[in-house]
Length: 117
Image 1 (cartoon, one colour):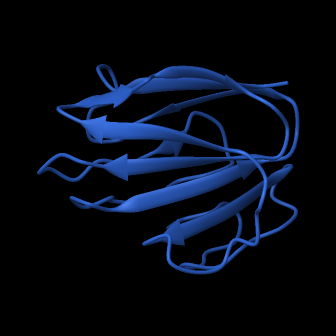
Image 2 (spheres, rainbow, N blue to C red):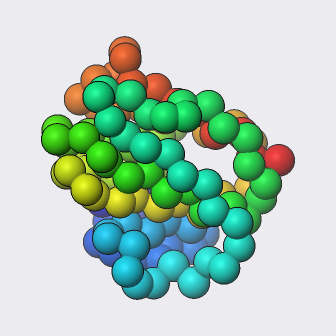
């Protein structure tokens, strides 16, 4: 996982523009006991690709397809790196705003937006 300006793998980060970032298989860390939203990555699409959540919600992206994809913020903030089949990427959103993201392998067809209230 690449996080600008800090690189890390499968650890919880704090202070990244109001985001706590975790990656890995979802079996450890994170510490978030708040609400969770799920997005499926499959067939070159995010489903759903537009969601509205409350502050403190953890969003899980699970790659249910056979090909690798990314979950990459349109601005600096989060980047899953290559998310292989069955891979899980998680972000906890602690700051209100609109967060657009895309797949770096399919930037024109795979896009999504998260609105945090």
